[in-house]
Length: 257
Image 1 (cartoon, rainbow, N blue to C red):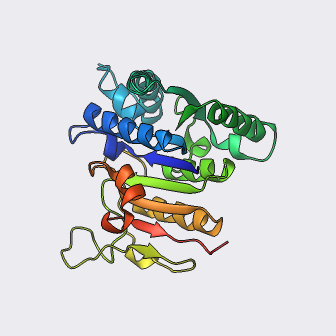
Image 2: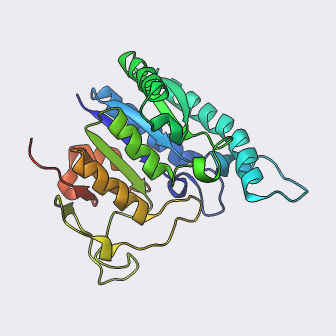
């Protein structure tokens, strides 16, 4: 049995028009349930709350960026966790919501309380679904993105593996749109890929490949196996576990223990 943190970003969970892709959310749940049946403990770090909320309410007056994020995340988180609840219930699996803030990862009582909460959930077969508490986290209180959050969760919970699901297969030698670019399948400890990283951020989220790479390198140094893969590929989580050599992805290797 291993402990796996799966992070899924807004670009994976939303359609091109910005609406939540319920079919893909359902497929993700199917795969997480499969991992659970195989004996793995899974923590799901899920974006998508703001995207959900933005489609729930039409506002007829001007809101600044902070007000929009607070309003839409408050509306959307209810919808998102409700969808996860219904989908996991079909597999007779329980889920629990964990909304967190950056200060909860500082050494001290809040850190220990959060870790204890998630530990007792896992011990009782509950799948934690983690997201940033966007209703109160603004400016300096915010995580860079959910890539950073997933890395902190993986470190806090001593995970064996972190899977970052993006909308591309991994890190390429150049632009993913360039036909001459090649997918980098393995990243050795200490190998510098910064020259290959595109700085553009995702369409609907705050992250991008740069944040995934930064998170992956930090976790690699901490001894956590990190995979960047395409969450839009059908059955990606199952394929990564059952036929990794045939599944496009970028893996950050760790030193042998």
